[in-house]
Image 1 (cartoon, rainbow, N blue to C red):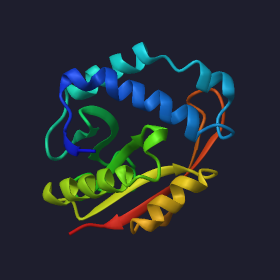
Image 2 (image 1 turned 60 degrees about the vertical axis):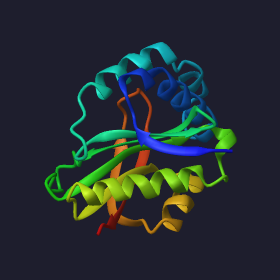
Image 3 (image 1 turned 90 degrees about the vertical axis):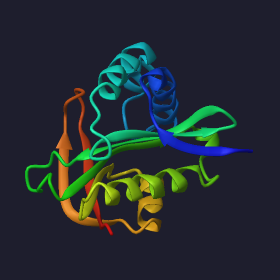
Length: 174
């Protein structure tokens, strides 16, 4: 099995959308309402990724994709923090890091996280942060195993019409 991580291109939007939908449906079962997960629309998500991929500022912001045997299996999106209590010139945020469920436990996520952290470091950020659902124990254990720690940041998000409680994790770079 060959594996390669590279910056995403605009042509990757559809594959990224498919990874997001498959990952969310598996990872967030029981953490988000089933009708919301069932209603995730690959076409709408692809359109959003078309916009994101057209507005990157590499290496300060961008999307990395992980390919296995020529197929996109995971991705990570990073950018300057948008948290009001952080400085976007020194804190980069990993806004998403997902792999297809069949790749869980295979090292794909670890490889993608390692490359995302390297890219944020190369971009000159001193720290990185990310948000994780409070109840997502699997993801929290993964992040903690990669050197991330809770920093006390909390968020109660109702933007999708239901409550999602999140914790912020942080790690130094460099």
